Each structure stands twice: as C-alpha cells, then as structure tokens.
Image (cartoon, rainbow, N blue to C red; front, side):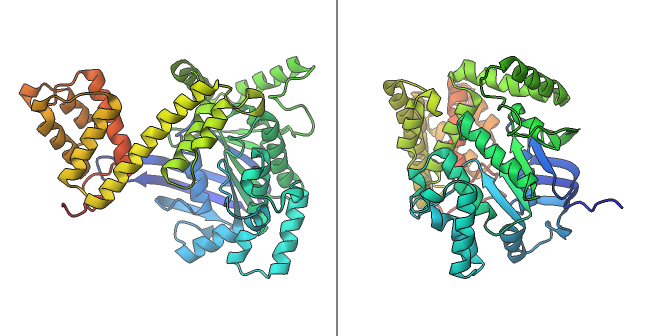
Length: 452
C-alpha cells in the first residue's frame, strides 16, 4: 500500500499584485509530494522561489492558489487561528537570521512557543532543559543571545523550533550566517533530527555542497520546479569529513564535490550558482555568501529590529578564520558608514512619508535626497519636471523604466536632461526609497495619504 504523503502540493501558484502592471509570479504550477521522515532539499539560486515555497508550506505565505495539504489538512483554506495552530504544533521553523529576542535569556527564548500554548511552567522548563542538553547549549541557559557565537545561537533557535515537538522541520538557509565548522555541526544536528527523531525535514539552500545529505533534491529555477534528483545513498555528515573542510584526503573530498555537482547540474543551476559567485567577486570583491550576510544586517537595520551598525563593522573587520570578511579597520568603517548612511536616509524618507503622505513636501524631500546621495545635480530648469516624475511614480502613474526614460530625456522634450548613467543611478535609488513605504505598487494597490 502506497504511503500517504505528509505534504502534498498540486498546481500551486504564488502571485503578487495579480492583474496589475507590476504582477510578479513567485511560484508557477508547483506539484510535489513529500513522505513522512524524508530529508528534502529545495535547491536553486537566490530569487528562484524556494523560500516562498517553504513559507507556503509553513502557512506564512498566503498569496497562494492551488492545493496545499500538510498532514492531510488544506493550508490554503485555513483561517488565521488554524494557521497559527499549524505553525505552533505541526511545523518548526529554523531561519538563517536566528530571530532570538536579545533582551531575554536563552532559556526564556526556547520556552517562548509553549507560553502561547499555555503549557505549565514546570513542563516547559523540563522540555527546554532536555533540548538544551541535547543540542549542547545548557551551559548558556542564563546568557543573552548576543553573548553566544553564531553556531550556539542557531542551536538555541533549533531548540526553540522543536519545543512543541513538531513532526516537520522547515529550515531556510539555516547555516548561511555560520562559519564552515559551525555550518557542518548545525547541518549534522538537523540530519540527526531526521534520522534519530524521524522528523520530516525540508532544507532550503543555494549551496551545492549540501546536496548529498538529502534523500531527494528539488531543483528550482524562476519560480518553477524543474527537476527532482534522488540520492540512493545519502551521505551522513558524521560518516565522512565535511566537504568544506581541508584534510589529508582532500582529493577524495574534491572528487565527491565534483560528482555531486555533475549529478545535480539540472537546467544549468550550478552554472548559475557559479556565475553569481563570479559576478559578486568581480563587482564588489565580496563572495555571494558574504554579500548575503551583509544584506541580512542591513535588512534588520531597515526594519528597526535592532542596531546592526556595530555588528556589520565587526563582521567586515573580523578575521576570515573566525567567519568574518577580514577587511582592515579603515575599509570596514568606510563601508559600514556608507551602508548605514543610506539606510538612515531611507528610514528618514519613510518617516517623512508617514507624516506628510503624497505631498509636495515629500516630493521635494525625496528630490533633495536623490541629489545629495548620488551627487547628481538637477538643473534649475528641470526641478519642476523632476518633482512631477517623483509624484507620478509615488502615485503609480509610471514605473521604474518610465522614471528612467524621463530622467534621460532632454529638457526640451519634457525630461530632466540627465545622461544615461545618472538617470539609471537616480531611478534605481528612487525605487529603494519607495520600497520602504509601500513596495512600489501602482495606484490601485495603495491608499494615498491625504496631501498636506
């Protein structure tokens, strides 16, 4: 008798702003089944939809059409309370950014999910202690998360994800912020949960060196599931040296990597991964992974979750052997200042927009910011036109391409008279500012504030 899948996805689409000019198809016609106890990897380049699919399974992504069942329960038709229960009991989430509350102890962070379920204090303390001992963080119980290393924080995050004993573990790039040794340890712990605790695990990654530990690999590209590969003999992390770790048997390890790369090279995904590494290295001097770490610090700073300025500087300045980038202090300080200055300007615009809405004050403020940050000086004769372009984009009467074209157009023809390079820089930066207030939607999607 065929085993009933624990997760079933049929004709699943995720669409943002449907029917609008800026419609985005994040997922297209996804069909898959996952059985109880499997270790699955969603693999592909950044932006391919793998995290969106993971969040749909978790019930966190609600812009879905099609059929999605977890434990035979239809996720797409669940009400908010049912989704909340699903998130609390059925699945456990592990993220790249640990999302631990910095102001409370490790012990309290782990127990937090059981507070919502009104589990008696004695019981949740015992469960938390057992998990901390199992994952090797019991000695850190009374410490704050910021006092722990990245690997320790992820162990705490895993403990928190497991405290309600879910059957399904969803891990979104869980080792993206860790050095190679900590990454190996955490992946080993997650694989352990699959083997010893019989948990169903779905791991999202863009790193091909992780692929051989899965039972099956779902290759994704441009929002579509393009290929499924089966591992007849998954490699257990405690059986061999980590693929990233240098050893006396490095030639064997390299051959294993090459075999994995050849085996999983579906639809050019590994070439795309390699291309991404090359582009980042050439254009910025950072690896793609380093750039993603920097992005995470900036993301947290933008939403005001906590001040990431010092953490970013420390990461850039920290020795490469300790998981940092290894820049000199001067370069680390310069980059941090530039990144955080732009972040602060975006936050300032968001505050202006919240106060004045789509008004002349907001338009003038943004025009001055665009000029000061890019160094582009708008000609006096073009100031009114620039303000019109900004207002049109805010109201959704044009898109980024339309902004670029009018900035590049001559003043005589009704444009701002910028050269192409400056027009491109200003239009790109403009979109960054808009994303901070309403995501760049068109006028039918937003509710403009009253003009002042």
